[in-house]
Image: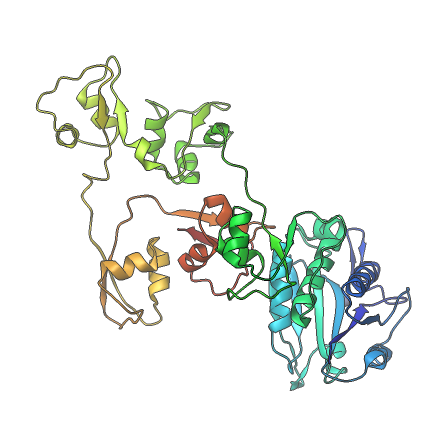
Length: 452
Ligand SMILES: [Zn+2]
């Protein structure tokens, strides 16, 4: 039997719910719910609202009304819409003790795609009877698949006030996408929606569709939360926007107040020496507004230095943290003579003695936690120790590989998604997840990601 949806706009009438920053909960839950009802109807999903005006529904009437619409069966999904309060930031989804997190996790992923961060999706138990759900709308609608969606915090100091006021339609649409996917109905975007969509036809493959739009299969899968390569005819796929090819200007960084050579180098995954070499800087002084050539991870062009008038082997060696002998041996120089325009190899990674770091495994350690601590990948750690499995024994001594390039990290901001971050760094979503040991697509603001 096709699933039906009861939409419950939280609060109403004499019960305004939470109220902060010009957001009155009962008004937003009604707007969101009415939008959702229209959209579900467009998609052919049977639905009904517990209220469609500013009326009071008490804790007895509300669940009764909800179950009067399509009954008490498990084929009914009840979505109770709310705005949170308490000073947090991000969406939350609460699901019933009787249900799995399948629907909640889909909603969470869709929120992230729509630019809203998710704090958690979870079950909450009644303290006086832990076999029962905490929230009455879930507890008193037995057998229905009941969830509470908290779209954000009205009293957030983060971006939630803006998310609720200006992005509420997109957030409601995110729940619509999750419901369509969960129920198994083809999703059709609202009219005038931004972004590209593609409807799967007979004979299509993920690879074929990805190629057509110039994206990778991984990107296409990530944008659509696909865990397998199987496509169903008629399924509407979101086509992620491809970034414009880099123009030379994007390799120029303009120095801002507070910048240091180190902070800029770090931002682009370069060493300070590489940044200085690339810009022929002789001192560490920067001026605001100064334009620097930056190159992301493009080490090949950074390892040479062109000799200028006045240079000596000593001045060049010093500049790159090399000894004169190291510089000479790097370039097979037999004399100390330099000629202007001569190109020298100044890569110091080849000559820097690699200190051997070791780590003794303690209780509670994992390859991932150790790799993360040292800013190396799990794979690098395994190969440095000749390990084929992920098993560790306490007391085991691991060699920590040294990284030749500085580890790039990224701190998750509001609105980020794995896909967006992966695209920015030119890595695949899977590689990003693997480098950080992520098993889901959920991110939290402030989370530090290792960029592979
Ligand atoms: Zn509420």
